[in-house]
Length: 612
Image 1 (cartoon, rainbow, N blue to C red):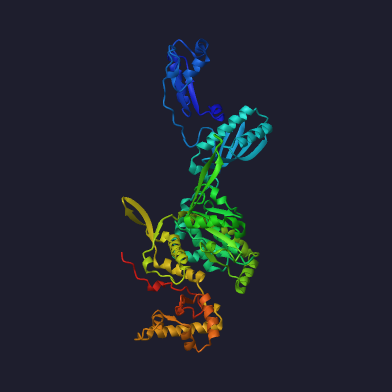
Image 2 (image 1 turned 180 degrees about the vertical axis):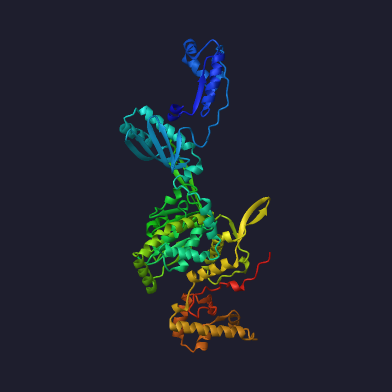
């Protein structure tokens, strides 16, 4: 039986003497060969295989062995007794096939074949084959569905191992059958083996996710892994990495100067991602993403080390983030008919995308899909980095480096525990966001997704609820105030602005416009209905009103009012088609203490408890 298995035999047909001893021998052999698909044929009682061959010829004997014995020549008395095929002990592993990390191994003849990195598709069967025999070794990567590649592999193996062409071609055919028999799920997973958790490591990961100070512990682990400072950026990147489990993940674009540490920020974040969920690339061509396997990016993190290496792929990245999938149709030549036909390839998300770049002129369409952030380039941060670099050379630094592996293992297991569960925000109808800019149409969804990402990260601290509809139950978790508080904090830090960006005269004009707006709000409704009165009721001003309130001249008002418009503290309200030009104040009085603020963002304290 070992010989049968070594040559890849899967099915055996027994043809014994057509008498009682022959039938008895058939039953015994079927029991012995139970690990194979085994059936039998019966000959007339006065014949054995040899006598039947001599009497009726090879063609008649072949018909007896055929699957349909009714096709046998009449008068020969041929009949068939079918026995059910015996199930193999492990249907997923054929006889003689050994499972190895990343693939399988099989011995055919005297040659050992190891197959790794199997990629299956409707029109491809790509593998890496390692062949070893008598101290000789040959390794090749090829598509087994390509006749040209199979022919080249056969020629190489015949040359290296001095074997007949027929034997090698039989080996390749057997390998192709084994690859085709691999389940789709296994074929997709062989590239990156998933580490299994022991009860101890699972308990550690669950305890980590349930910690009340989870956010603080994540920041502390960043420090142990070599990234200091950058509190808001570290949390944003960790949340984006975790959000790969959501239907609409977060994506991060780190824009900063060369050498500032943008790649270090991204690398530190993706270190916490389980290896099986990370696709990290240095460069990316324009159409490469369109031809990946269908589920190769589903709930994964796609990290590009430098945006300059993926300029041609920005269209694909934008669509992957927005639509959650990529679909392409290409024209190919049918190998069977020789005619041109179309083939559709679909790559499904959702995918969390990380990109770093030094280009401040990244197009607006691409930037709008990302949370755009930059690293801290201040002198204080530079000093902290230099101190840390020197510390890494000490014994304490060596201890920190040694402690990284258990920290990363803990985070990997914690991330594996996170479920792709729906997130419901019961406070959503109470939230607000500045509605005076078109950019808000894209910024608010990012803000709402950030809240969901925080809730997803804290899911082990929340009760799992079930929502039923039409007999189907769907689990979900709910956003709480702490999720919104942290999201507001990060949104303010990352998207917020400060009054420090204003020139001194621009700041003075803004303060005077605030006083003017406050006076309009407290002033009683006037009886007059001139063209300016509606502007007052809408908290708007004309340039004349600004000049009268400030005492400034026209040139000075024009210059610093334009500054406030460009920085979006003031909005041009009207002024076309002969209308009186008016301006509306967008500023609500924030930031006088030097802190950042986001216009129109409702604080957590203003939220009421949702009704059940």
